[in-house]
Length: 209
Image (cartoon, rainbow, N blue to C red; front, side, top):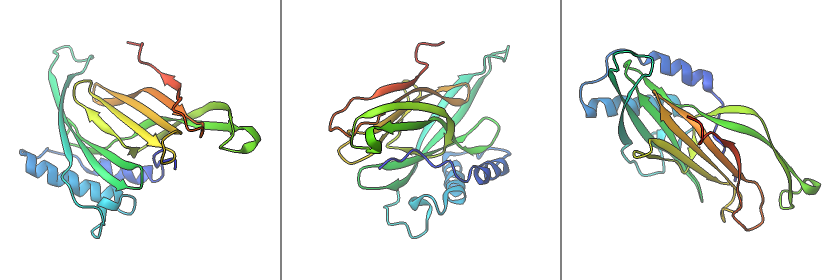
């Protein structure tokens, strides 16, 4: 099963995000409560864990403080944002996560992640046959990532979506934090349902400054 992230409802998310402005709560408990409330407001009906009758056991969000400086600021003042990782749903072989960022402007924003929109061609239109081509048609914005986690050392988010249970077909993305945003850095796709792990790189900005 392919879970590429749901780009539907972006207008609702942006509208909800713009409403959360002002002074950030002074303590962690208050901030966490506000983030959880925003999560439920934005993702109700899309994330099982945002529902009052969720069948998934409740768990607190994972929280990471990130410090950085804007390159355009001459005084070099340090900014602090807080990243929240929320479990959205859990299936047979994929979990989905969403990410919310409490930024330096007092906003709590659901994050969007750039992903390539792919056109995959299989021999005789049979997805279990050999792959003929994998083409990037453009980019989409996804607000859900599969089996995703944040690495504080590299300040990056990695997602690995299994397209079926044995994991021989999948997509893997890497987004690095830079000046308040997560930028798509690398994206790999293994489009062949051949029982082997053989991804190909679709997007690669890892060698660029």
